[in-house]
Length: 213
Image: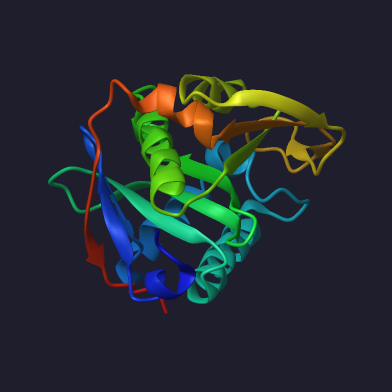
């Protein structure tokens, strides 16, 4: 089992059939800034009534801070054999004692519809249960975010409950007018995950030194 102390030395690099999941590097933040500045991407992330650029900067700062404290584990998503990021996937609110974490992800719009989010999500969930000894992984999505909910289904997660009027979501792709929306909570327990990965062939290998400062 990997502990928080062990992970302070670096995150393990994870592979799937098409992807590499690795720790974030300093030169990744330009790409992340571009992703978070896309209204179509940020509309369901880090909600608030501030302009998109402000929310993007706030999200980047949160990633830097939580990475440094290992409160969250942030992985960059890359194609195998290619360096640039195409997304980010994270374990947030990681409680090492209780064995729980919340998972979230963002994928570049150029890669939507290619199954990238599902592939990365399933790999991270496996990593959480096998290497971090998690007993439960939780995910949340706004009820209007049908695409994200579909990814959670495909990853083997199950609907658990709804949080009424949680946060806000933009009314349209570029509007800053906010409307309260319910949030759906999905989860997976360790015993469920065994069935999901039986047909997959994933690998965990060398450790990647953290480079986020």
